[in-house]
Image 1 (spheres, one colour):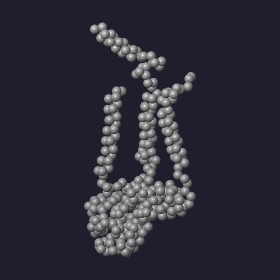
Image 2: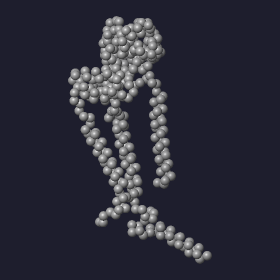
Image 3: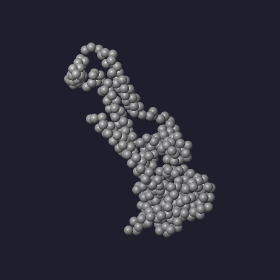
Image 4: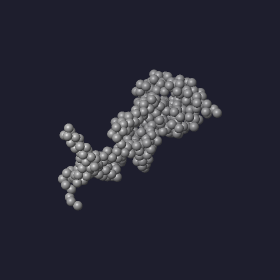
Length: 176
Length: 181
């Protein structure tokens, strides 16, 4: 097999670049997802981490960790008390969900309707892959004199007939 | 598939998407903002024991067997004044029928709360949620908010914003009739 010629490599290059970018993005997302958030150290860090997952109920899109509202301060106080009482972070979160519902979470839950928020980007990613594949297929097609071109550059049957008809017409016109 | 068909299909998909989003928005806009789904409705009302503003402490478990209207309010809340007539009417109408109206003062100073209660002539019991622990247990998102608890101690209704006397009467009558059967 002979090495690819320069025009052949140029056709493949955009596809390879897109593929590498997609693989790099997928790898980064996987690493971030697997590692998760770094573990909290001190009790204050733990309080801050749990509070950052919870929405301040009287604020516009601020977490209980970031909000200066008194009720958010009370949430942080309750979190600290419950940690001191030996409750786990998940148990504490569940306590707030019991009172406020899933809407108290800053990120949608990974169950029920909340899964949509996680699945939708994957769906969009899949659609984007398909959308990228269509032009890639076009790039791969040989750019000959139309559909059905022969690999050695010879005319296809349809093209040959078109040329023959054109020649016949030309001769007829010359004969008049 | 011809180009025309492809374009038609794409256009149909876009129109279907836009219509779906519009339908979702229309559904949301049609909802009554005072009626907010709460995971607590239908479940046991969170227990509490709160100090009275000028009376004895109140423990929710002591009110078991009564219909309890729990109203969270604050002196700095303008909308809380709007619903005062409804709460006072409910209290005077149902207090001898096994119904308690309980005001829970939220994030306030004692002196401001006393001034408010005195100036508006409130006679039903008032307690103070000094650490907002009860507010958090009830999933409070602001004041005023009102919860109706049945005789078995279950939350049957939650109203965000000023509550009307009619809504309270409808709910209380239903609960009293259910209890009388």
